[in-house]
Amino acid sequence: MKQLALFLVLIFLSCSLPAQEIQKVAKAKTEVLADVPPDSVPKRWLIRGSGSIAFTQAAFSNWASGGQNSLGLTSYLNFKANYRKGKHVWANTVDLGYGFNLQGKGSTAVFNKTNDKIELTTAYGFELHKKWYLTLLANFRSQFASGYNYPDDSTVISKFLAPGYLVAGVGISYTPANWFYLYISPASGRFTFVNDSALSAAGAFGVEKGKKLRKEFGAYLRTDFNKDLAKNINLSTTLELFTDYFHNFGSIDVNWSFLLSMKVNKWLAASIQTQLIYDEDIMIQTDPTEPAGPRTQFKELFGIGLTYNLN
Image (cartoon, rainbow, N blue to C red; front, side):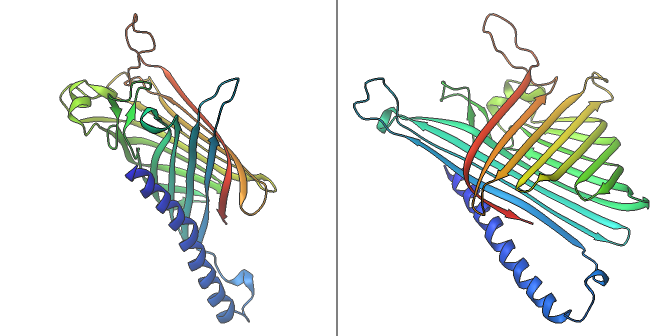
């Protein structure tokens, strides 16, 4: 639960402090530049973000048809800060999520993690020709808390930096608008971390048994789309593709995330989140009578709750 508390603090700070500082800066600029035409002032920073916390609760007492008390939370933070000056651009994205469901009460209560995500991306680009950039990009993914193969809540199957993924490389990016980004790299390194002795000994997440790091080198593609489809409806989606030149070349690892946010008013919104992953190196056993193998992983979350948008 320490990781949950940390995540909620991050959401609060990201939603409140940046908004306060931006309002101060905007007010100061308005006073200093009151006599300057707006079009003559370049906008170097483009900052957008949204955060949400949704709670669910159910309670039963002498309920004839049956039921189980439960308490749940789903939260996410999606924040982008992009800088542009002359031929230089710098794009940064923070994508965090955490959710849980607590069923029952007292000593019989069962805790289930429903969402856990850390993803950080930074990219520097130098303009070569009309929205085409030579780009250095790095992307990191992991999670906050330990994961279990529920209903078995005693055997850890994942935790922070087990796995952890880092992709870094040089390539070409294309940005025709501030809501679309395409990056193609023929030379990217991908590193898979399993910083846990038991998981490392089992050869989890594609690392060799007893090792804590797997190194790959190959081609990487990433595309980002973040746009208001209509008033109070925003779509944010990211697709990542990677293939290793030296191990099973042509087999493509896929990571596709999707977030649709529908705002009801200033503080209330509904959101739909999905994530699809396919990785040839991750062995998943769905039937104990059959050997483990790569599987298409899919996650879907729906929530209605408090939200804050920073635009």
